[in-house]
Image (tube, rainbow, N blue to C red; front, side, top):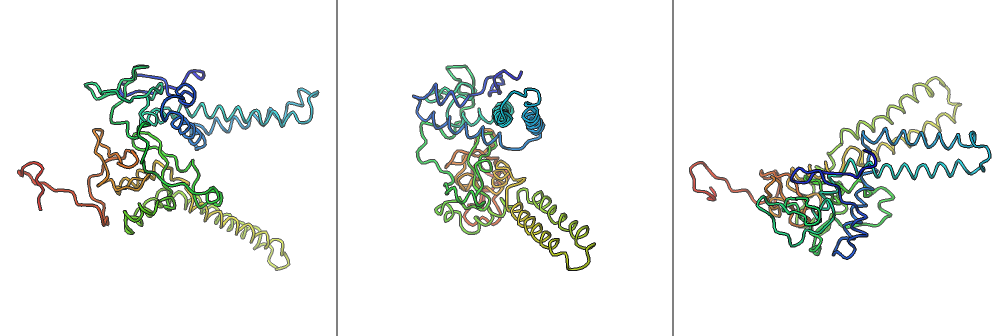
Length: 363
């Protein structure tokens, strides 16, 4: 039902409510680190609601059309209203539509919110702290407040131990405005367990100098090439549309004129062509078709964490669910046991042959 609370599935398969950011900001204000986690969950909901998905497109388009129809026809049915009434109706309708999109996002992306809260050491259902709880026989942490169960290894960045956690550095808002850095929508992405993290940009402008030096020049170039290839075909396909429009303008507007007396046509063609050309370049260099989760999975295939750029072969902790947790930031990525080609600082994995004693490397 539309009015019911968003729910998710815990690790025992039970349907439980999802933790709300307001619970952490208001009800658990005395809990250490809870306001910061609640603020981060609000940013996750805002970023997820701004992303375009096939499920939300009909809702958004239909809502905008209804708001425009209501704003344009209100004075027709109520002629006694002042002249600024349609403007007020329009902005109020957009506000209700934005709130509806947020609620729809919380229903459709509920597992991400619960997984993010659990990674901070909070119950993904009620927001109660899991600090000090001992796992049961199945390895689950049972919340004493609501009874929801979560695997103990999902707590990778506890709110009571936030000091020294690695992550991408922040830059000024000016670089984001001119397009050199992605906004938060293009940076907030989920790892393999569904917990949200602030990812690196594909040009690695947010990569700290110390981490760049530890990775080495070869690994940094390999990571940049890998991240730039994610969604490249889709971006090039969309960038071909401006070129097609320029060719159509040449065929239908310039060639039939023939003479050079139509200066305005050529000026218009030049301005349009340049604007479409720069728009195509910006599209190619942008993040269309390259969501943060896809970039994180691509970086994990070369054994690099896309949050703090650590080498997962040396700084990764294997987990029971066939993932590797980064030691620096706590992000979980699929385990890739093969060494990365071209890695200059990744140690080779030990090889064993049939019949050898266990844990005995073969030269």
